[in-house]
Image (cartoon, rainbow, N blue to C red; front, side, top):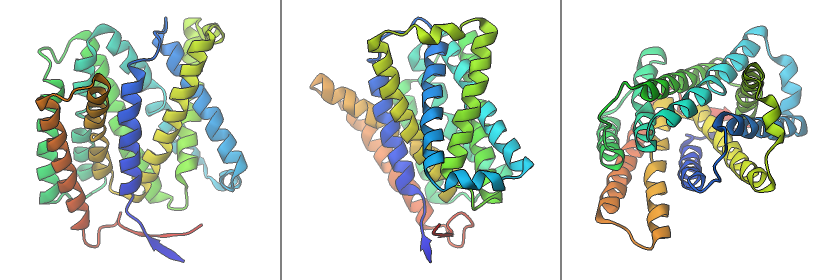
Length: 306
């Protein structure tokens, strides 16, 4: 039986999870070492995904993977699940959260460029309109930093570059192996990514620090791990089903969600926040419209029910 899907629902779910996670993480207790915290969180997600993999028919599919497939999964773990996390958190320690947020939210631009060049994805006029609105919304929300190339900023730009490559690499993997599920790809990202991060901690002599969290910190690791699990699964399923440039653009809509939650929590919504939310909402309408106008596009496919 065949069913037509477009992945937009999964992309929206990812944006909602992202928007809520960013707000929640601002209240997370301070950890002495962000790399140790991130490694612990990623390891827990890898364990969750391994459990899901074993408990479903996806585990059986691993034996059908070729050496090239395993190379893809390991590469995704290295490029998307380990190196950029280290770079990003080291960069944040050297610059402001606002600067980090602005640079990170430019990723949809680079993904769109990469999708056009390497995936031959088609860009519509509606998408360009939404694209411009997203850039404007980000400028209002985060403000362009005065220094783009400081030490911390350079690390964050590198992290964004790695995550951009991950987007393109994952989409190429799904296009080449249409029978691969998002669960298998997500597992590869987090499992091999966790291994690389553990090796990095071992090199730094900090692997033992993962066992020194207090009860409060363990709860935060658990909560943020569950959110990261949902984020990765919905994001990869969206990339599997839809053009990656549209998915990347929709994920930016998590920014006004964070702004709205924070404003409600404060008990007041500033006019600037309403303007930003309206701009992002309109951008979302244009992006959705762009997908609806993609006739005969290879990513708007009929997928076989497993």
